[in-house]
Image (cartoon, rainbow, N blue to C red):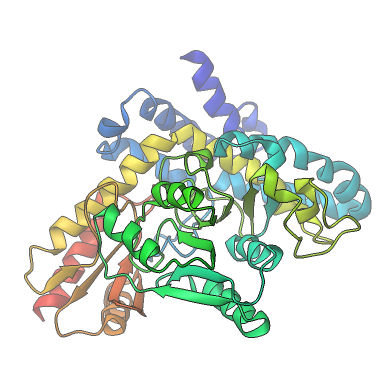
Length: 429
């Protein structure tokens, strides 16, 4: 136990910090590390409901005390330990950019790659570090050889950037998109699997699979879809922008060909950080988005030829991984699902409020969506912010018309009580 305490203290830079920070700041850091230590003594299920420990742990973030942020699904705030790491690496870079960036910080990419690979459950030779999911999946969209008439299966509920990318390739090269239009929520794996199969023909080459839909938080059976795609000789691409470091899994669980995610969402890494995974036997066959002198190399590093980048955010991913591991992937998932279920069950006591997400843990986690009969989603979101300073996002997309609500680990049930009360007042006005 003393070893674990030391780990948490080291993670927050507490050791020897008295000379660098005020006593109040040190006391706060000590309490955060102690809260994390105590959380780790509890099972994920019991830890999920311990409000005191989560409230203490939430001090690790610097979120606004005036605005209740319930749109963490767009991009998540970073704990202060990550923010401080970015500042430290950035200031170091500015002392002598070409030396510290290229000869010092650039050497940190390989240790970071191994650390990310361990978190993801894959080989470090199959993982590249980039800036976001759009860049990762754009690499796959343009890097996989296809011929005119080849078909891609995807849903109308996939993320717009991915839809636009495939539509552009459809316009330029004559590939064909076979669309699925899901009716949400859906809590039956076979319904989703059948939809993909029904959209598949002898010309289908790729299944584009979104693990967790951005609009409502619906979780799709990605592992089953990837297995079925492999059985049919079809390439599987997984968009995991919203699920990585949110839902407790490893990339290897999917047995997919391609996988992309944004680390600035649920891992709480610096803004503009992401990763891509490509199965080893497909790396050589995939063209990089930014060409190198060996574009047909089997080295995953060919996908990192971005030119000059900011090493500060990239290197601070390591501190985000440490913070995520300090909580524990399973504890994080259980807490996030508990918070979503807490507000969902409360707001639906009003008959005018409708949920657009399943409460079953296998089909949703932190993200949820609701609507109020007779009130447009945009009006609900506007009223929540104008009258109650609660930040959400309205969604009007294919088969979805709702307000999306996304708490995070720093959100308390007391915060959600404020939100629940506000929804109740809007619904009964």
